[in-house]
Image (cartoon, rainbow, N blue to C red; front, top):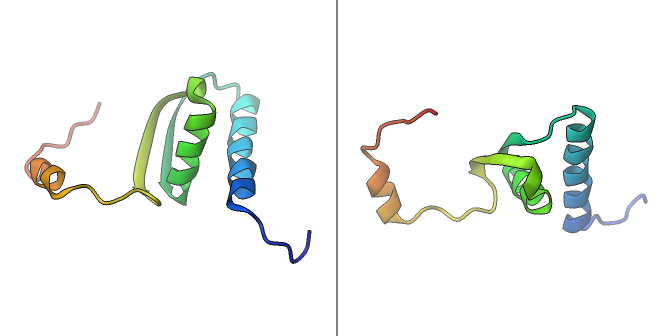
Length: 84
């Protein structure tokens, strides 16, 4: 209701269930799901709840993900971009 605080779990459920309703209406069996920023957080939450519906998960500058360790950053400095 008005003025009441919204729990993170309630907001997460609202958006994750919304993605699932959209997937069902669009008649998509499995999807490549990409999330950016807070959308990345929600994409992970969706993939955890409906793993059978996610073929691949792509996260771009996702909220809540710690920075990679220096060893990984250094290993990728000269890596070519691979598009599949």
